[in-house]
Image 1 (spheres, rainbow, N blue to C red):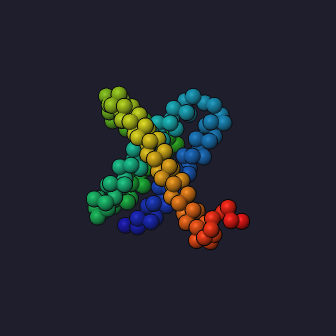
Image 2: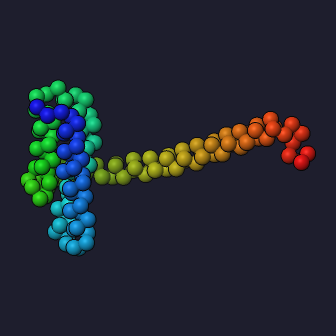
Image 3: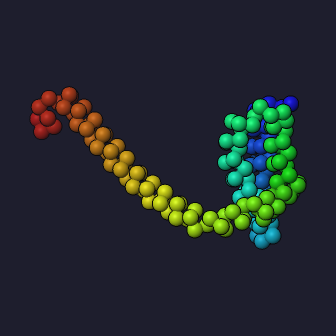
Length: 148
């Protein structure tokens, strides 16, 4: 049985860095077929990574869990097992197509709320910094800036 650290390093290397390099080569070659292979892989890999966050908590006690994760990554890779198109076609595409409108709507709401939240906290930070500067000025210059 292998450790979670070895599994993590293997998935980082073969699930992320290796495909990133081949995606770079695909972009340079401008091959539509290769684009499709690697884009499909990245979509499936993103879902795998998100799911892995939760499955690790509940399934890491299973024998050979980490070995199975590594084998799954090798199977998904276009240059090895080429399983990502199968997962995409059979599972992800139908699910995403069915829920596309709802997902788009939710993402728009999150985007707008996020912008509002960033503006709110940025305003709060500016006000906080302004008060902090004024406190420093008052402590160091009891008669104010005009007394200079």
